[in-house]
Image 1 (cartoon, helix red, strand yellow):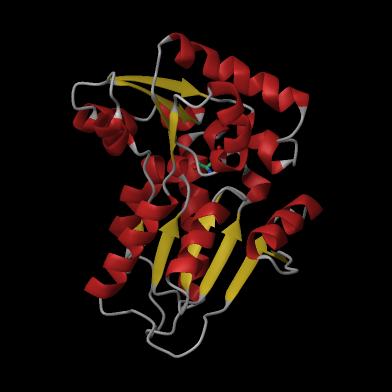
Image 2 (cartoon, rainbow, N blue to C red):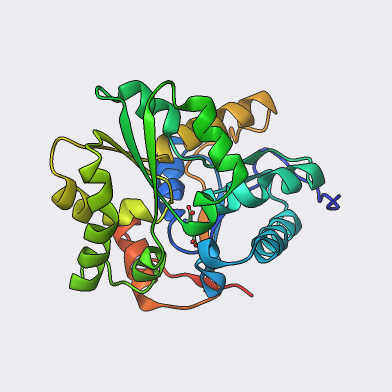
Length: 269
Ligand code: DGL
């Protein structure tokens, strides 16, 4: 068990990802739960998690969670599909504060699909994970689910190459088999992928609907805060702090664009 520090309703929520992917979720949280204080950690030095062995993913998740607890966080959002499927169960067993994870939106995709053909883009470590495979079986509801691992894509986004020809070629390579299977729903099963949704839409066209997870994760966080009576009730807007262990000006730019104000990541070890 991690030794918990004192917390109050005003304590921050810790949110992390292997890099900048989880910012898509952090942004949704700040918009919908504006009174909450947030601490975001981009573990970019260790990205991509999807190409790391299981014990490394677990070690990173526990190191960051321990640090959040030292910062008196009242809840933790694992804003990473790869870390959720590979490490959230062991983390929940060690920590008593609410831990909210993110899982690919298979259930709503299967429900929305007219031809019962759903594509899912994930990292390699998610694609092979038994928890993920059982999520598919549990929620496919008669639909055929086509899983496409996307090695190299997180790295393209982390290094600011999302608008490059190389990234477009990589996406075309990953999406072609899904289009050949005639999918009408496409689940973005990695929090980095919303940052290439424009490129994905260009390739798949208007007949394929994209599903992201920022909204359902924010709703789940809100339910957990209410259930545990730890909603921040103070007047005014909460503060958000952003940390990264691999400084990159592209990341500062993305952060500033998303929050529409000049922001920088602070160094995190
Ligand atoms: N954003 C992470 C996810 O949702 C990316 C994992 C990685 O670093 O490979 O899976």
